[in-house]
Length: 207
Length: 323
Image 1 (cartoon, rainbow over the protein chains, first blue to last red):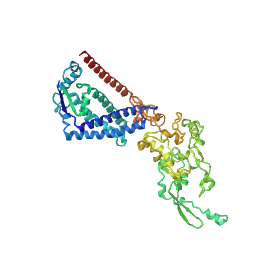
Image 2 (cartoon, each protein chain N blue to C red):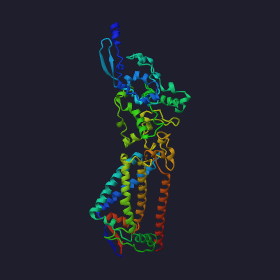
Image 3 (tube, rainbow over the protein chains, first blue to last red):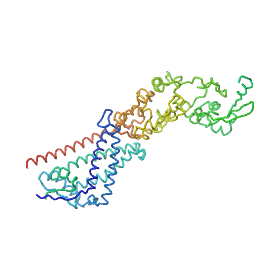
Image 4 (cartoon, each protein chain N blue to C red):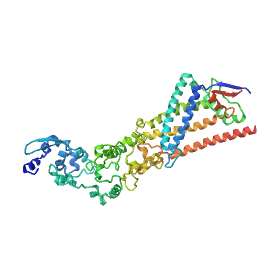
């Protein structure tokens, strides 16, 4: 069986992705440490967790800015924008593949190529994560870092508390996304194929 | 000084501002003062000088007079006094009648002052305030040094029971912290009781992240006193080496803030559904504020996700083996 290699991940995306991944993991770890801080000795000292969380958040935010600008300049953004009318049906086709077809050795319903970098499920989840969840977590995080910028009270509840709850919920949603993202990345031809793509830039698929 | 002439010249005195009780001065006496105090006019004998920035001293023999600044520590703001806890008092309820002599003689000036316990101690009327416990805490406090009395923090001419009736917690925190900063941020006052060369609150708290947010959101005594559940406000000020420096003392589900700042908050009703919920009325403390329902929900979703991934992996492995 011949292997088709498509260059889909240019250097800037791979660099962005690795910075995103490292800062994401550190933010989740320190975020959990802060949320469940205890009087005893936890996994990490509270003040160190705060500092590390703040630094990683700044890195993530800067990196997110590069991602948005890079998408505009390089044209990579078109993979997130091109919505088809039958998106709903396509989502169902992709989902059926994951819950059934994959075990029957069926081929991927949406071949990945230069025109279509993501399958419909990837596309909708990436759009939700990168253009809804990320801005929300960055803005709420900014509010927590600079509490004086947050509205004092909303319906007699501290604006800071509401901002923090939004931040925590988004953090959790993104953590769950990361787990699923990591798992679906093992669904290539071989479990390591898609991870390799993010290293060398080539998407590999057997004919 | 010993000659009669000298003696009388020193008595020259100046019934200072009595001379200057101009019509505009009477405007300084608001009707609200008369509503709360029966001795407003008597008190004016003192306040005519002690509520002003300056007074006039006059030599009645030579007719010479001069303006003097009133020492800031001796200035009493009428508005503040007549809205304080002691608003009903006459000056001579606490101070000697000898102060009616001007200039005040030394014996009068160094008279033994009444302290809180002299009126409030061991009296059923004030039992709810636990003055006896406060006194005991003070005895064990780092503040228990010579010449340090209740008045150093609680000026009887201006004191308000802010925390007890706090509607605006931020304002109450500011009021409380200003009590500390009155000396700890004012070297001139600080030197009255210590020989230390300098004080710099900002430097000594440099280790504290988000310093401004902390200073605005909690009182100094949150970290600088020992918790005492029997009184509203702890008075055992600890040496600085024993002050709280571990973040998780406040930033955890068993936050000490619930035993200090938020101890008797009247707005406890928003406790339901939140851990340390009363805090979120005014602010948010990372680690201390959690929503148990959301915590549980997050564990359920995480568990289901891992279960789904595990099950999918299991089916893939099984399929691979059967192929």
